[in-house]
Each structure stands twice: as C-alpha cells, then as structure tokens.
Image (tube, rainbow, N blue to C red):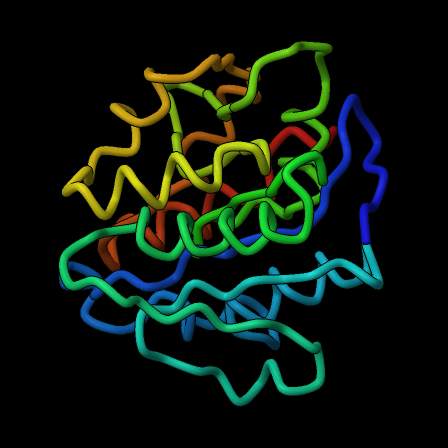
Length: 210
C-alpha cells in the first residue's frame, strides 16, 4: 500500500535503524526510556499514529522488542556481519522494491533521535525535487535521516554485497539533496554516550516545533 505524506512524494514504508552495538552508550539505545515509553516504542507509536496502515521495518541486528508486539511491525535482522546500517536499510529497500519499484519512498530514521518522526518528515518533504535521496541536515549532515526511493533497492543490496559500507559513498553515486532542519535540533538528532543522551534530554523541551 502506498500512503501519501504531507509533501511531494509517497511514503511506502518506514525503517527504524536500531541494529548498532551501542558500545559508547553501554546499553541498547532502543531500550532507553523517555517519559513512559522506550525510544523504540515512542518512534513506532508516532509512526503508527501518523500512518495507521504503514509498513514499519525494525532493522535491529538480531534483537526483537516485546513492547512492539501490538504495533504490527516487520523485523529485519542482519544477514551480513559488520555491514553497518546499510545491511538493514538495504534489505528494507529491497523489500519495498519487490512490492513495486515505483512504490515511492522509504522513510528512514535512526533510533538515536529524539525528534518525533512527524517533525522530521515535515522537513524532508518540504521541497520539490526529482532527487532519489533526500537527507536531513541541521548543523551537520545526518545521512540516516532521509527519504530513499524504492528504485534504489537493487542498487543498495548489490553495493552491500560487493563490500560497500559507506552510506555517503552510496548516496553520492545517486541524485540527492538536503533538507534543512532548525539548528537547535542538532543535539537531539544523534547521541552516542550517556552524556550526549542527557544533553539531548535537556535540549528537547526548547526545540523549534514545525
């Protein structure tokens, strides 16, 4: 099923990237609690409220999350060791492409983002473009927040199978653009340590809301 979003394209599915080992954090980032729910449940709950029928891929390495049982999600487990986020992302894109290469876009977000998916999607869909990839930028580029055309599924799977591991090397081989988010979002778009997570929690209440 193709679901129209608020902007220029169609969102066929969403992928949450949560397969990292979280070495600097010391615990699985997806299990961190913000308010009453874990980060993974918070993102899925928001996506499900935004698009009730949306297919949601959880790219989680080898992990499953019991709190997601009520949300009807699809797990994608890594099939290649040390392939990084492209392992799960490539499988998700390939699955969408098998449904229909003209199906629209895969909305991609990492687990270590406190910005709600609705806000991220507003930025990503804010401009018209024929680019096959749109990436979020704030004070720096965030290549794991983006829209990826379903037509890239085969290319990404082949890239990973041939040993490709750099997200940006893959991106730069295709047409792409950036979508600019408010500068004050920066600390909440990525965190890798307990200290950075606390900084994000402190910054969150004062962020620009679109």
